[in-house]
Image 1 (cartoon, rainbow, N blue to C red):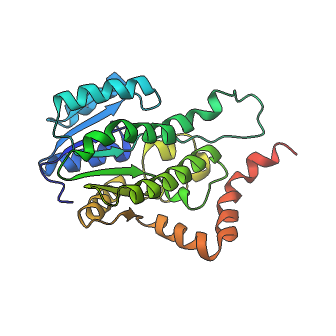
Image 2: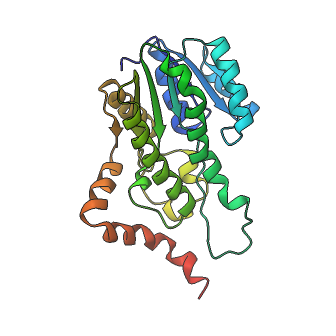
Length: 258
């Protein structure tokens, strides 16, 4: 992919990795559209990145996705790149009975159902383009689950499996399918809910953005920067060892139920 003069839609583009990608892609001469749920953040993003297009939308809502499709394809018919980046990550104690049945699946709706529905909605349009791409943002935790975030880990493993199948089914089309699996990255998603990782060094979001675009321009279908590549290797060589290491961070939470 050249990633110049493309028309690119990024979900969850008002902060973190999505915002970083949007800024970098704008400087390369692309038309960039970002979505988000918060109108205040969308307005701030437009002010921070002049020339950016920002649309309020929620990937957990199928009706919102359908409305987004109608608006984007009407206003930006050259759309040829979809980056499924929107996601939420929470620390969840599965032994805490106060978590409601609707609340427990919030990450499933945003992180897994959202990208699947976005692809299902936009794929016919992308297939009509001379060159097109879908980029699904998973995580290093797609390879090894993080016991403190069981639902998030499950969504990213599921999205990875879906992305591989999607790539296979589209192998004879003009649509390339990429997986970007970031490691722990200095973003609000990584820090907000997890005092357990406050002393852990994470990848700078600017470096993540640089490596992501480098991988995309070199047509690397799986982009695993830094620790994510280590997690994939360890998931094959010593899966229980690396899982137990990540699990140690959940031990204080678990001990409360003894």
